[in-house]
Structure formats: C-alpha cells, structure tokens
Length: 225
Image 1 (cartoon, one colour):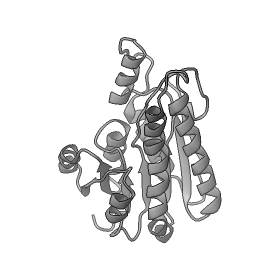
Image 2: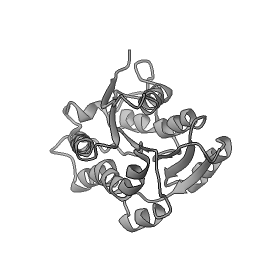
Image 3: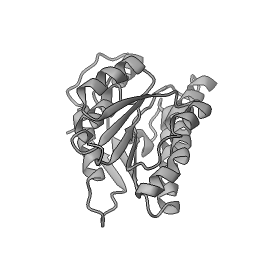
C-alpha cells in the first residue's frame, strides 16, 4: 500500500470529491481534504489507505501547516467549492468574496504551496471547474467569475509548469448537495432527471489521471444527456 502514488482530494466529504476518492482508492493512497473532520474520518474508514486531512482552505496559515509534511504528491484534485449565485444588482460583496475565496484563491494557494511536492513527483493537478467557467449566464455572475478565474489559473499553471499535468474538468449540473441548494435558490423543485451523477464526473477525473505518460489531458467537458 505504501508504494501506491499519493493523491490529495479536497471537498472529499461529499459529492464529487467523495466520488473521486472512492474511484481513486484502488490505485492511490489518499488524503481526504475538507472542513468536516467527522465526515472525513468516517469516509477514511471505508477506504483502505485513506487518511482524513481536515483543513480550512481559506486560511493560508492552516494550509501551510497542513502541507508541511508532504514531500511528493502525485495527484491533487481540487473539488471543494461553493456556489453563491445572484443577479449583479442583488449580489452582495460577500457573495463575490465567498466564491473567490473558495473557488479561486484556495485553489491557487494550495497549489502554490504544493508545487515542490508536485514537481518532485511530476504530478497531476485536476481542477473541478464548471460549465459556468465556460459560459456566464444571467443570475450566475459571482460564481461564474470565480470559475473563469480558476480556469485562467489552470491554463497559466499548465504553461509555467511543463513537468506537471493540469486538467480542467467542466461538468454540467451534477446531482450533489450543492445542486440542491442551487435549485432551492432558484425557487425550483429538485429534479435529477437531467443532472449528471457525481460518479460520472469522478470517472472523467480518474480517466485523466490514468492517462498514459505521453498524453496530457487538458480540458474535459461533460454535459447531462
């Protein structure tokens, strides 16, 4: 087990992050990142070789301490995120700030701190973006702007760090707790008929991570059928 490559998955306590963890565990040792230490511990008990990695991603000091012992990292999956959606006339400064703090700045800072470990392993960074990172729709501007920003970050990282593979995944609406909150905010009944499954997004992530060394999967877009 100790010979397996090491993967860190943020947002691992639920949704897409948890699904990614389940699909990576046969081939990787796992660090399960998130805020909910109890949920992470429960998940770690289900997954051989997995350890909870509770940390506040928006706290740079906590991040720096948490990554201090990671010398080599093969896979970093950024799955943590929030969705504060509103029309521009209604969106508060805190709506914009929350989106950027979690969806952009936390991704940037965690990746920056882990660059030495990623370089040592010639690792792979996967950013779970969103369809909103490709097209900004009315009522979604604070969230979409944060996802456009993290898309630019991933593109720049790919060009600057030639020995690290960087993949952006752009899923459409996916059946998660976050999506339930979005439907509620839109005043709609929750209906999964035209939603992706979290497992489907996780499969795309694992496919990218398991690509042969000569291949660099840069962008993956998924839409519900």
